[in-house]
Length: 200
Image (cartoon, rainbow, N blue to C red):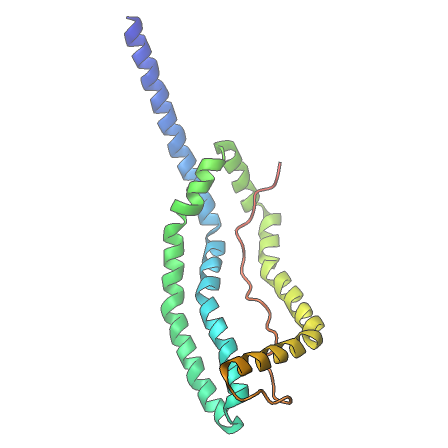
């Protein structure tokens, strides 16, 4: 009789554990839905990064090796290629990021947060104050980036030109004309990072 009672208790405990796990997974899924714009932002930055690096190289070549009268047609062709790249790669990266989120971010949330903590996190993410702050994220980053670029441009651009001269020398390319335009310091791409839970 005692053994049957023990088995029943174990069964009830297992059922309760399963219910708890299912409830927790639902909470994790809700967090991921609330964080989907941030997840898509990460995918966008990763997708755009190779093109941004290539564009820096293109600007240097255009300004140092392409005659001014030929720059506009070439630039238009390159912009068309970049648009095609973005149209192909951005949706792919976004979809893959959303698909991988449960097994990466979701798994970490499930492992490190209790159900109560997940409920608190959801309340934080859904709060009007947090939403207002998140909506300002890109604007605040752009404001700082623009100000930073304007502030350091005078001191950074000579260093960029010196670096271009050094690299051109290593590659055996014609030296950069001192008066030639140099690729300006560009603001970093903005993206919303996943919101962090408030520290206890």
